[in-house]
Amino acid sequence: MQCTKFWLYVKIKPTLFYKIDMLHNEVFLGDDCPVTSYIPNVYYEFFYHPTKCGIKNMAFGRTLLLKTKIKYISTTSEQRVEMPVTCVSRNYNRLIPDIDEDYPNSLTNEPGPSTGSPGDTAVAFAEWPQ
Image 1 (tube, rainbow, N blue to C red):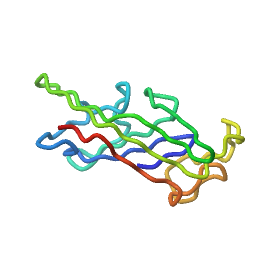
Image 2 (cartoon, rainbow, N blue to C red):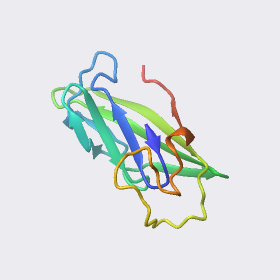
Image 3 (cartoon, rainbow, N blue to C red):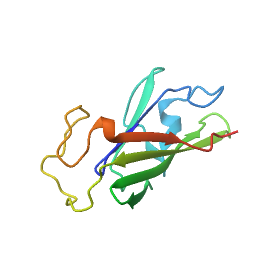
Image 4 (cartoon, rainbow, N blue to C red):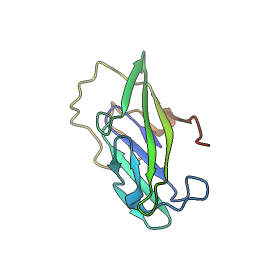
């Protein structure tokens, strides 16, 4: 998982939840945002702007905290599972405008001047479902 002021990127395995093999159309980010790309039985990716999908944004000084969840909804049963996820981006600067001409067009290790670097991103998972 990586995040900045401009995007949240989450990559998960189809076996994220214990004893559940999820299909790409059964897993969602936040408020029902679908997988944006995948390789069947290998990984599922979500790539969204932090103001979409019901992602909660909180800024603490130069730290940006993004909170959301991964949600599984079975297409063949009534089974549903959720897992909260949190991404922390350090060196966040509130003074940079929301529109940045140097916004990177893809996930690279060459971020624009306002996005921080992969080394400035920390990830936390909390409240593992029972």
